Length: 314
Image (cartoon, rainbow, N blue to C red; front, side, top):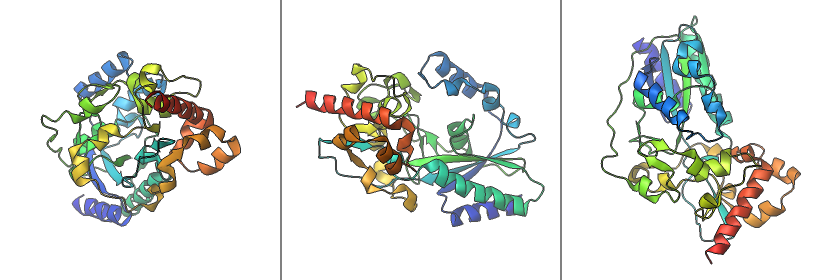
């Protein structure tokens, strides 16, 4: 299957995919146990969907019968840095500044899966971009896309950690790639800098303490706890603090070539504009944006909490 693998890699480069690796479908029991412990510890907070489909999550062949290979793709989304001087504005996490990655990345992976079908006509594949019960980060680390950093993100020695992970599960058996060494070493900057101490230990994130959880995943009716809101000075949607301090991002993050992910108008957003925004304007402005996930009510909640936090520090 070496020739087919080379063809797939070549096609992925043509599609603008940042990296691609291949691994087997097996999942170590230790990884399953760690995940179960994370769930049992309630570190997933109200994201109950992470409890669902546990059997599928731990057995890829329940997703695709006769599956043999997990093809792991990385897509760089880093839009660059931006000025943060204006206290009347809130920051948006870099992953959410452009077009919804579910659309952009899945289209690329669908084309890659179609190409695989062309060169291996009897094959079957399924494509996932953060939408299924799959251990994406586990497979990314196992395949050698990068290693899991202490902030939980996969870190690539080529592009840092500002990238999306996409998965193609296929019943074609490929030669597998090898994991790479973890290069975090003794660095603990991400643990030290997190304002809410959401990284409770290396690779273990307590969503109940995470600014990103509260400004993205929490339902609009969930009020942000003061213990979180008071320590958030900047972020309207998401949080990149633990990535910003990572030496690997400072050294290797490079601006994406995917124009869909670059939208300076969404890097900093006026808090006053959000407070005054009507549903029609919200739906239009964030039509193809990940920001729509939190709904207008949730974004207003975030804006009010951020205004209060900023004012209390002046």
